[in-house]
Length: 313
Image (cartoon, one colour):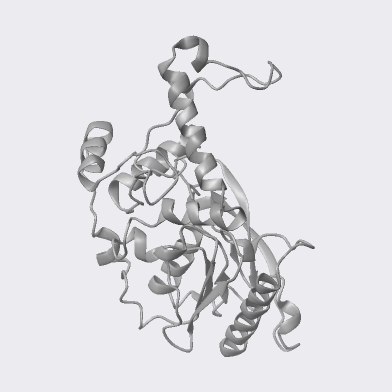
């Protein structure tokens, strides 16, 4: 989930021009877009070519945009439609847990649902994972000779947990490098994250992460205290009924699913549940092994995008 702002792909109806009548002629243009600073790295004044499509003059005619990202980007796509409906005509928000991050849902489901996914694949998996964690703990307690055992017979270098582990305010992980620091900071300032694991309702070690623990960590690391209700106030929380033209897609195997919009709220706030789908499977490249559910979800998304195009005209 540690996507950065630049991962939000903003398209102006690019692949769907065949759905537009011949009266609407779109021209492809590029402009220099500054590389955003949200990856916590200094990019100075570096730019990239941002593509957009336009009909008529950009200064005299309204241009249609729809947004189609996923995960954190999926949340941003919904927020863009909430905040700028005059610019963004529709959004596909795939695997976007907007209720969780705005402190409007339970925080306890993530590791439970990961465990359920393993159980669906093989009922013995969760117990096997628990045994594996116990074995690791036994190796740690047995001293360095056990702790640094290399199961690859030297073909791969062992991880150095003392230098490579990235502590952060997201118990699901923040990744590595400058991006991890950016996501950690955001998890400390505005985005609510899942609670930790408990070893009882899930297959992971008992690693709690309470809101008090989060406050203490963020104050120590960044000298800030999380604003747990910031997203709820500024970006609507669950009060989204006045919005429109958003499709919320979630896979049944996605452990972030329960933090998102799982039922349609109106005829233009649509929820699609993808049976057997993983995290933002609908926006991944087509694969011969795709379940019928994700193929249908993609067809539904195209249908709604076509509808938005027709409304725009």
